[in-house]
Length: 277
Image (tube, rainbow, N blue to C red; front, side):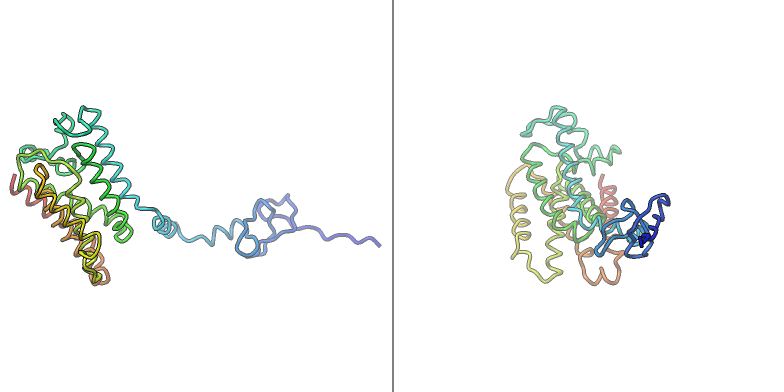
């Protein structure tokens, strides 16, 4: 006697397609095109979709594995401005100031005339390849260290708070000089990193952070033409904001304060600038 094989099930998504396979999760019949390999067996598209975490959680996980995106963007922005000023006649080794550098540089005269944007644009201006190379090397190293700890948003706030602090220091100590460079922001990151080590019971002088900070401060005072005010202003504001942002008890009890600290620092610096220009 000839046995008749049992009829095959139909794919739930393609009723015209017969299939002998089933989803190992919901056990519904599905064709090869509607099954995705899972840890155990295969799952249908509906089960795969329902097992995915919410969009916000997926974005959080994606952000967590990205390598210091904000740091890379800041480095790229500085390089882009350097190239732009170079196309406008600025020399790669410094020297005379070009018209484009003059448009971005910081001096009390320009801020008093209402050109407040220079407080920020000066932080992206560099005079020569060595100037930008040293700043970008330190920015990349410090950003790779601090951004994963702070998160992208707070790291950017800290960076700009230190930058504005550097602008305040430059206007206080060298108001007539045309100042530029990311040094104020970079010194602020060094100060914040040193404070973060202190919060963790580590002596910064026993690490590369403390040595680099002290060495750069010595260079600041030893070599003419360097913005002493810019460096000191940046490191003071960066360390001050960093003290709050890296304090373990504040992070546990008042996490909002770790966001408010750099914002308050920017506000205080702008108020001080308004008072002196």
